[in-house]
Length: 618
Image (cartoon, rainbow, N blue to C red):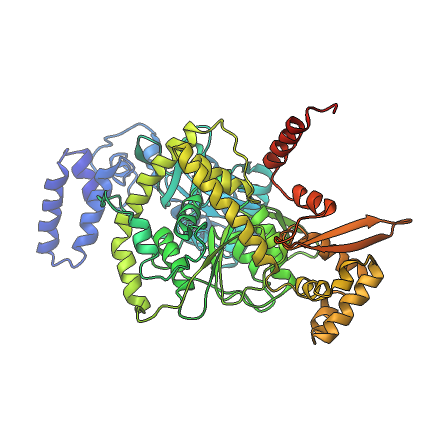
């Protein structure tokens, strides 16, 4: 470093000539560390923060010059000493608490001069301007350990623990609250999509341009994704759908329902992953099929395209206690083989889909509660899904797959194909994202009405297409999807099964049941069908039964109408009407059927009624 500093500052030697000179000296002395010498030369020529400054000021004890060449007390000499050098000096001069306090003050001063402290979603982050990296201030944060090691504070030392806790205290008082994103962020005011590629390289995508900015530029901050693999933008086939060609390749999608285009649903869900900021409520994608149907493969392919080769499907513990950890620490998770019926999994899925705040106890405390926003996209696979509760079923997009016959491909070969084509496919995806952004801008002020419960997803889909024809096709798709959700919610519902058995007896159709009478009727029917053990474990009183009946009434209204009439006090009586398309409806049935419609259809029907009957007065 000394020779390099003299060559640069005193002799004004060009870098290439200096490297050749160092090579000659190293070869003459049989120096095996020639590469380190060359690196020192390059480091010296990279900036003025060099050891040569101390030589010219005569402050280097090892190399003296006849006269001081630089008399100014510039900052370069001070900056030549790294944080690690300063920590080592403090360790030599101080011990105990004096040392700890001195190091803490040095760390905090360095952060104030060269970085910032941020807070987001109950986490503190350290952002060093030169590093362009969001470093979470967590006990087990590897990036924080690496930074502290670089600064001379090893995580194995007691000093590290002291500095860590002091850093937390400093962050609690001085952190700036910001939004720190994972993977993607869409600015709906600028109509710009920011896409993570590396901790220092962010794609900014607009309808006309694709540029690269650094983390923190334009006020956009991304958390580092350790298992993420960057990709390059390359040329791609203009006459093919590169995304679907790789995602659904050789898979046997069930197309038995002509009103539901499953390929289109998969495609829309994939692109919605880039727009989490305008999608507080998120649909849950579920792939359903027997073993060997590729239900895990289709989701793994999507994950590897987005995140890289380290992405894989995962599972939860039998009690699902690790689900909160997965949700709060990931942008996309695929839960494999979700076949076990539990109340907790339904509650968790409902919270994810509706974007609720997740409350957990803070570790290492007794009663401190922390709230996390559910910003994670979740997909699931199942052979026989048990998450059919009506409030969950309303938020599902179900993709049904048939068994692959003589089309099995080794997973390693498929992974290799995906990774080899990832640059091309993601380049195609970005080109499609530009079109979507253009359409979102064009349709920004439009309001769409539809039947789909996850309105944010449907709104995104309708605004992401260009023409009214495409929008009408999507509206019909969502209407068909609503009916599929209703069928999904009731297909294995024990109350629905028992109710069908009860009304198969015409005598019961003419009866009005109190809540207690209805409970006894269901309990007796469950015993007759040998379902009493399952029924009793869930429905232990009339209130639980009647509440569930009223919850599922909209899902079964095309087959059974539930009529509830208020009696004396707080008592209600229940009766049932079986819908039979071959017979004319009674007045009560007609009213019930009319009320089970979209608001637009209801208003149009009422206006037509007024017109046909001659006006409101008549």
